[in-house]
Image (tube, rainbow over all chains, first blue to last red):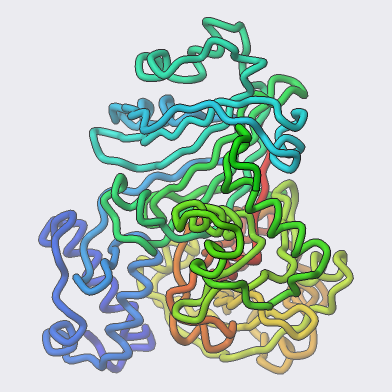
Length: 238
Length: 238
């Protein structure tokens, strides 16, 4: 560390740790030295070390587990929000093998508020489908989908275990998604989701609500919970 | 609650609580009864009550404060990601009065990695500006901006306290933002940010990195931290 430089010390420390990660002197999921140990190793103040770690976390290089320490992050996924995308196709593009586990499948009747949101009538029925999406066997997203029964009357749990949902829509019903509206907000992971995502409850997560349409007809409403340290979404504005 | 209905009980409970919020029987920032009290009031199981509260939280109706309970959320802000927007203009459109506090202003030299990110050369200098953005005096975002000194050499703290940054760029330098790339991810609030945003550390937050350009020249890099319960971002994909 060059303490006389105009480059802030926390940036210098970040550089050194990033170099160790890039050259695999620190491996994915490996535990970093504690804040105190880093203070000693680099002869830096606690404030500087903390700032460097916080920035590295926000840059996606490391993740924290409450009470356990700080670890090197695995590769993260950036989704460019320019056109319609599907989990299956995006993972294949990255050379990953996408798989899906159907965690639950049931029929529910919708109350007025929920029906309005889905452009349906109160008491209309929908399939509620909870799925875990994985890439190379690593769980990445926990998704809850609502599919109008009157549009896809014969949807079964078995179908969903065998084929991507959008393939079923297209092959069995000749229905394709032509437009989607997605809404992003920040949340934390719930206990039940954490069990499937291998993360503690209260870990930061991205909440994505997708309303998918064929022309102006809503055919799917899906709420996805994605690990906050693994996903980011990019948009270009002009 | 109609326990014979095909409408799930948690949806029925959500409806009842939303009606109380909409009719102001529950006021903004008012504390909700505890989970256990709600079980008694509605004669429902803990699982059902918890699911309703978790869904209401994700729908933006309520927020939780660790160890303090659950409260009714104030209005939330939806930003439509279709074209360039500025905090000042968006708040004015909603009839809110935007203000900005400059929390710190300093010059730093950039290391190689940071300089690359900003299309600058190592050791180039930038202004690092930390600002708190408020609407009707309520703190909403904590922003750290990096502005290349060679593009805006005479920028001062005083300027930033008096005029919106983009007004300074335009009036004093004839430089306007023509394109921005924004990257969204989920994070949690840091202690120092929480002090300014009136939130506990570890509250969920949205992290927005903005790279703003005039044509192909990067003129600003800003990292914003926005309350997770107050902001969502919508994009339409075709």
